[in-house]
Image (cartoon, rainbow, N blue to C red):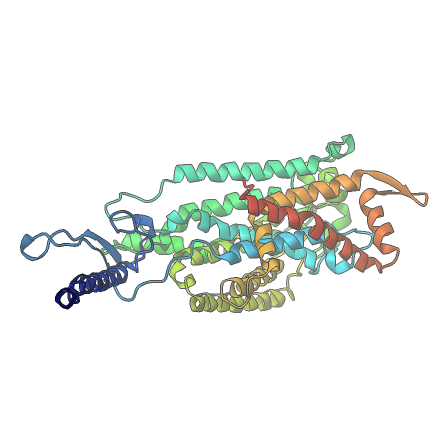
Length: 500
């Protein structure tokens, strides 16, 4: 026994030490491998990141199969060489984009679901000149639509790849722009004709909110597609003529276009004298004697204007200034695309959001100042109204960006609901219009007076025991929370996104 016990002790020591050495070596190799490939966002079989997933300054070198002197090196390792510190992972989508759009959708539903006979004046459109909460919906949709143009067509703001000839192909984008503008106009005409009653078709409007969105989208998208190249970096040896052309196009894109629209509106409006007899002694900007009233009535007649007025709030001359609101969103969207690296970190988001809020405050102040000369009014879409609402939208988006992507607001069900509403904005706009129009056209008599299911439901259910303005607000909130919010969350949970 003694002879066998002595030599048996050192026997298992050698494999135990080998196992420890192998484990330690594996840990070291894995740590080195992870350290060298950590800047690469995603790895394939060769250890290299996909081409679209690489950050700026990162180059995937592939497998190192040869060592010094041409000898084979083992093991093969993927190495990422980064110029400077590794960049943080890229955010594919800012939550604030959907959240801000969701805020506008919720506001649109709340405003559109008001009962006109009960609602407070602040929740109805201003009659004539002035500014109410309801007057913020249309410019908000124009602003967010402008932001979506460069985000969805970001290829026009990216320099061409090395060795590539020319930039992105414009023909498919132009066809897509024309198709979407035509669909927006067609959907707007469908809503104007609904519920297809003879008296409605006899007074059919040819313009409206979605029609204006379609026209403005067409103009701003064409501006972006034709002028975005001027925002790209200049070549190594640019010619003087090319530099001057690039500078002129960039100046037109960033300032000349909106300034031209505003100047044209001011000159045309204040140099116009209405030939109508009732406007003979009228001076200054008067709604019923304005250029808008004359053009809209001359084109399709009073019966085809909104509510039979002598002008239409979505008419042609006022669309000339409405383009400015969409252009402002276009500029913000181009900043999102061109400075995407600054939006990757919380600090960068906060700085950009602060700049947006500051620019919005300046725009509001400038619009209020201009309003002392040119009255603020949505029905004519005056330049002062465009400037004030653009400032409000810029500051509002900055606040939402600060809250959702700047780390100032923790994720809550309310925030998720806004994001869900923002994923299908056109669907909920059309649905809310159809629901309201359908219930408003269903006749019902209450206490001997004729009414509709929409108005009588609010009056009997809420206005009988609540103040009229509060009853109208509660009625709209009930429709938003009971009908539209659950549907929005259901669509997002199923991954259904309805777009044109």
